[in-house]
Amino acid sequence: MELPKHIAIIMDGNGRWATERGLSRIEGHQHGVKAVKRALESALDNEIPYLTIYAFSSENWSRPEAEVNGLMKLLNQFLKSEERNLIKNKVRLRTIGRIEALPKDTQNVLQSMVQKTEDFDAITLTIALNYSSKNEIVDAFKVLIEEHKEGKIDVASLNYETIEKYLYTRDLPNPDLIIRTSGEFRLSNFLLLQSAYSEIYVTPVYWPDFTEADFKGALEHYSKRNRRFGNVQQII
Image (cartoon, rainbow, N blue to C red; front, top):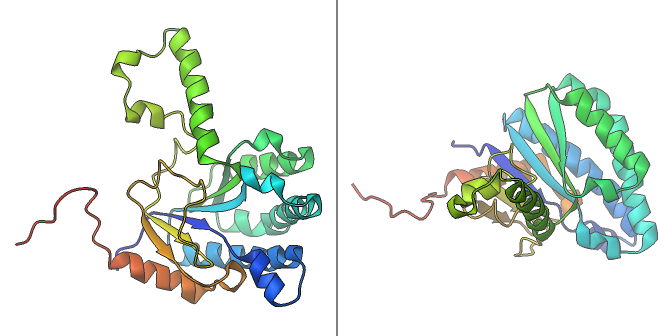
């Protein structure tokens, strides 16, 4: 079975999962953290080199303050509790997004784990935090324009490959497969440029219920896709 090198996941449905069970939204996120651990274990078991998870979008700041604070606390707890497992399994942790806007304690925990795991190569786990694809493009062009002013870039020869070098994901391959849970058919401002030719797998399963079997189902779906990248399939 052909497997993707890079899987990106839009982890959706924590709130609805909790509401349907008479629980608070933060309890839904707590169960969502368990699903993150399962997804990482599945990626390791299947030797997927890159896993990216959409943990907190730039638009999520509009949620109630208590929920946002709870999400940041959960992130800190996850990183601290999983530090031993990440190191044991040689998981390289990295982040994308405007990390500088996160609470200082969260920034410190993230920076510490990124540094401790920077030389690992079993799998790269990228957490998208305060992430927006639109913001990513804006940030890329701010740097690009400054470098043009300094004479480092020739606008006449500008192409997508040049722009790509200024994205948050410049050292990551484009995702082969994007998984979205909860049945919603949209990308929600996530890796819009990078996903131009990604296969997209949507499941009605809420994120807290996403299991190893669901992960395997997504892999099987991917293996049956004919990826042409805009070309015409040759019939022999």
